[in-house]
Length: 170
Image (cartoon, rainbow, N blue to C red; front, side, top):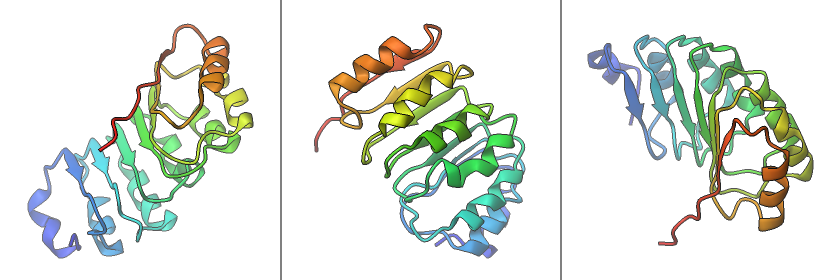
């Protein structure tokens, strides 16, 4: 379990991967004070709230944020949109809405990965071409179907690298 007490030895840490429900609100408080963190993965931590996540938004060196299996939407990750150093966002676990796309559009994010979830709404697909700041968009299958892939390929700016890899079944 990650609490405030056992993070003091990690003051110079640059990458932090915490998988599973092993972090507390006091642990996130402490992580928010680790000013050298460039990559944070909080995958599988369903006991964290939007308020807890907001504490991390003050880290101005953060380059990569992985929020998987948490049930948080891109809208709930909006505080990160103002971090100029944040370049990569990976998330899943829900249906992607047009509002999610607008949050990402207004950020400095250059690379986005969408993992498994309930899919992408039609409005979100129609809004994705406004992500002109992106350099790379990866949507792991089966998040969207073949018709949606075709639609997206036809609508996205050519400068954006699009990938639709199939997820291997275990």
